[in-house]
Image (cartoon, rainbow, N blue to C red; front, side):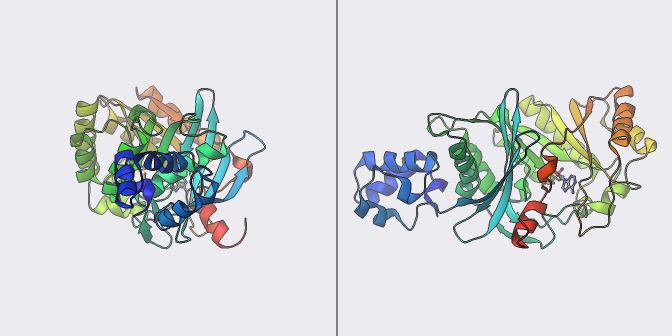
Length: 344
Ligand code: SAH
């Protein structure tokens, strides 16, 4: 356990167990939510620091790259045990969107993705997922009462629905009025489609935006790049999405990464449009970000626009994902790998 895994009340109880007065619990909470390391929490006496040293979060930013083109920032975070994950901060007109990770590595094994190259190393705890937000908020000059981050996307490394308990605790912490109070409406998670946990998310009363990594118009093509397609069919995913929509009223987003010669033909677009017709959804078309360890090839930006155009003409809401921070390229698990190889 680290203290950022806990709610305010739980931290107050923890402080009480250590024989500390209630206000100390709130001070510890403030320190954590201001993104401070233990030796930066100046209002706590030294002997108290020793008492809470073991449980106080030790995650930190170990690398930060800033795009000269558009101000996008890419971060490498080290957890207390030295494991690293990556995150990306994008600046939009309406505010800051932060993309964070939910696992170190991933066990889904998608053929185009760099996060799963070495399988799953471990889950991040709720407090470690939260910590990435608190660190970046602090890096932007914000704090508990000055929230700089408006939107969150859980699209960094890992499969959020493969770490359900920690994910759900995180969602409660981040949307709590005691904490940063980020509305669930401003949070998206991206999943390769772990069907039972999509139902669970809806039944547990969350109302975040659900993004499905579809990447194929049919199961046969999907199986070529996504092992999870052998467990759940696109039909099963669609059923779960309808259920999610009916429970939450939230439009579902589909991600469709274009891979040359695999899923990028006009027929593929037509089949996809047919499949999604009638569902309240949006399709994000993304040219593959080529991964050096993988042989899959990307499409040109114009080919992506053409694919998108076919979808639009057939009545779907679809856009090509904007690329950001290209001069500091390498997300989707590649940044972490570069860091581990000592290249950045
Ligand atoms: N496990 C989650 C989050 C993964 S990353 C999921 O599967 O959705 C977020 C998105 O980036 C997913 O849609 C994923 O399929 C996509 N992605 C991964 N590697 C990519 C690459 N090299 N190029 C483009 N998109 C990629």
